[in-house]
Structure formats: C-alpha cells, structure tokens
Length: 384
Image 1 (cartoon, rainbow, N blue to C red):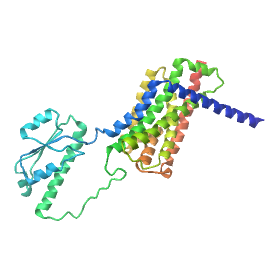
Image 2 (cartoon, rainbow, N blue to C red):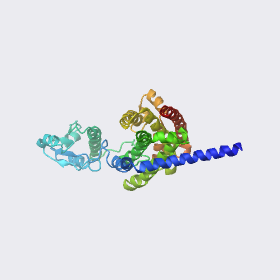
Image 3 (cartoon, rainbow, N blue to C red):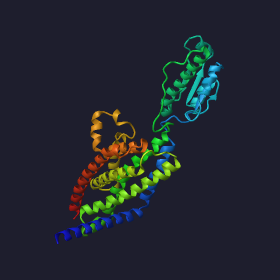
Image 4 (tube, one colour):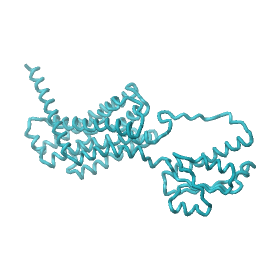
C-alpha cells in the first residue's frame, strides 16, 4: 500500500509539473514582446554577428601614392587586394590629407622617389604609412598587416633580383579548425552561446515576475502544488523553448544562411545546452525573487550578464586573465558551457573530451536550483 501511495504521489507530481509547464508555454505564446525577442535573438542577432565582424580586417580602404613608379612599387601595390583590403586607389601626394579627412580611406601608403634604387643599393629607404586612427579596430590590425606585406614583397624582390637562394628555414603555417581564418565562423557560434545564457535568464525571470504582477501567484498558492513543482514547471518550459530556438538557429542561420561548418555532434552540443539551461533558468528565477519589478530585473541582468559574458572565455581566452579571475569563474556555468561549445562546435570534440564540462554544469545547475528553490519557498511563504 505504501509503495502504491508513493507511486501515485510521484505520478501526480509529474502531472502537476507537466501542466504548469504547459501553462508557461501558453503564457509565453500570448506575450508578443517575448516572442519577438526570441526570434530576433536567434536570427538577426546571430546573422549580424557572423556577417559583420568590425574588429577584424575586412575590405579596409587603402590609397597608394607611388612617387617611385618602379617595378618594386608596382609589386607592392598589387599585393593589396580583397578580402582584407580594397584594391588600392592611386592618388597624388597632395591628396593624402584630403582623402583621410573625408574618411574615404583608412590607410595611405606613400612610396618615395628612388625607393627601388635605395633597396637594391642596400640602403634603408622609408615608406610612409598614414593611418586614420579614428577607425581603431582597422587601424590596429591593418598597420601591422601592411608592414608585413611590404616587407615580404621587398624581401622576395631582392631574392629574385640578386639570385639569392631561398632561406634554409621556412615557416609553414597550417590553421586548424578554421583554415581560412574566417571570423564569421567564430562570431556566429559565440553569439548563440551568449544568447542562450541571456535569453534563458530573461524568460525564466520574466515568467515569475509576470505572474506576480498579474496576481496569478496567489492562485497557485491555493492549488495543491508545491513550490518545487511550480519551479520545475517553469524550468522545463523555458529550457524547451530556448533549446528549440538554438537548434533551429544552428541549422538555418549558422549552417544555412552563413554557411558555417559545424565540426562536432550537434546532439552532444544540445545535451550540454540543456544542462546549461537548467542552471541559467534557475539563476533567472533566483534573480526574479530578488527583483520587485521588471525594471529592477533588467538592472540585475546587466550586472550579471556583463561579467559572465566577458569572463567566461568567449571574448578572450581564460588563460590571459588573472589567476584569481580564472578560479572565481569556475563557479559560473557560462565558463564550462563556453568551453564545451568551443570544443564540440569548433574542434569536433566528443564525450570523452567534454565530460568534465558536462559534470561541472550538472553540479552547478543542481546547486543553483537548490538555492533558487529555497529562496522561492521563502518568497511564497511571505505572500501566503
């Protein structure tokens, strides 16, 4: 009899969780603002992050002043071409300032008279590079790239002109996982990883605040449901929504529109995403119990998401951060989710490589759920 009673209690609890989750899905369906946010986040936001990477060198405008008009200067000019630079626009020396002031060029490279003769004579001639430093992202990477291109062309010109042998040591560069070093591969996938965390926290927190503002929490208190069932209903519903949006975004935006190849198992990535969502939705509910309104919840989101985004390893490698920061961020689910995502999506890692990240996510998710449930119980107790 005791076993039968326990079994019926478990089934009743599961049925309550199912119905509460379905209620959350219907509430979300009736919220057009949230639906627009979900659609925008996993389509337009992901596409623009992959298609436009302003911090990279792409089609940077360059002008060329050739006062030498030699074979070497022509060789240097022909070395600049898309996709990193536009084809150099030939201008006169007196037009450099005007082109830079008007913003029509970022780089203006000037080859002085007698440049080729000085190079062949063993002297050290100077070519002048003027840079519009207001375009900081292009200016920083472009200046170094231009210097390498010019030095490479001069070196190869000297080797061919003097008949010198090729140096005995050569660096053979092979870029793994992204042979073309296409920034869109990194940008689009990391945007999805970041959006998964942000949207899951927003949806879970907004679901609780919406019920509080509409007065439906009081209705739940008089129903035969427990705080754990209420919270689990919200968690599984929001996990399902974000997980479905993530899978569709990977298939149709990343692989379809952007043509970004995914090296590893999408199923394994979605399994890790589900564990991560269990942690972040619990975090969202916890934050919603602290906030009294949506504006307060928005401020908490800003304070939470900025450090999670910047310090989880998606923007800069964790190894470049202070050791104390690395240690503290081990407690954040985004750290392990970012590591897992990069390993699977970029490098094709399997379960044997990412099992530790999955274990961390499960442990952190369990702790966050426990803390959130305790706080949620106290909040409901004060309202009863």
